[in-house]
Amino acid sequence: MVVEADVEQIVDVEKWCLSLSKIRRHLSKRTAVAIMRSTSALLGPHTTSVFKRAQSGLFAGKTKQYGNNVPHSKHKTRRTWLPNVQTKRLYSETLNEKIKTKVTTHALKTVDKFGGLDGYLMNARISSLGDEGLRLREKLLDAKIAALR
Image (cartoon, rainbow, N blue to C red; front, top):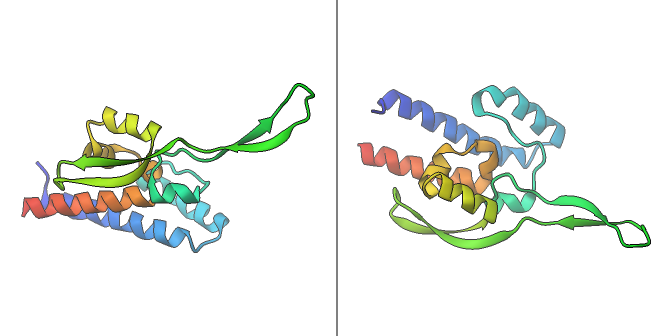
């Protein structure tokens, strides 16, 4: 059973995480990393690199990767690999609606592992959710609190 004081504490932490993710865009990378490291005990481990596109969906910590094309002549040229992103409509039992979002195939597997979108948003590490995941998590918490009242 969830005590009302616990719910208020969870909501405070979640709102603080959302405000931190909004502020992070306006800070220098060094300052943002310092804030993340100082709060890692409260929030868990964070990634230090911010993949801009990952803020608009559920990417489960996947980012752009870098490497080389190496042909037979051994002349290396730089290239990038992007995450496998799909647009999907995922059903939320708490909100009783389908939510259209960009999601990586890795995140889809993780959603299945946690038993649906609600389980993924509530149990996944905050660092892997990104801005969109935190927004959905706050929406989910608000719906759960409203259901308790």
